[in-house]
Amino acid sequence: MQYAIFDSTGNLIESFEDERSAREALDRIIDAESEAAEHVALFVYGDDGMPVGDPVFAPAASGVR
Image (cartoon, rainbow, N blue to C red; front, side):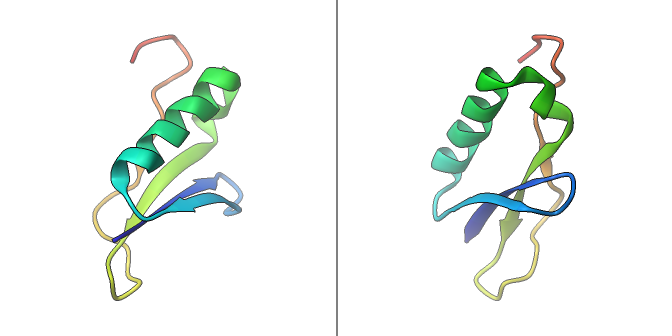
């Protein structure tokens, strides 16, 4: 599996080989810039390069986690 964080314009921010690192990076992005929560998402890709499941969106910038 591959994990990738993209912004809302489709630009790759960073990719990972494990889910934990990807989710931690997503949290760090939101912690550093809360308004980014509306513009980033984590996508999961299978070994065949095809998307798996729905993207994981960052929690709203309201502070709810």
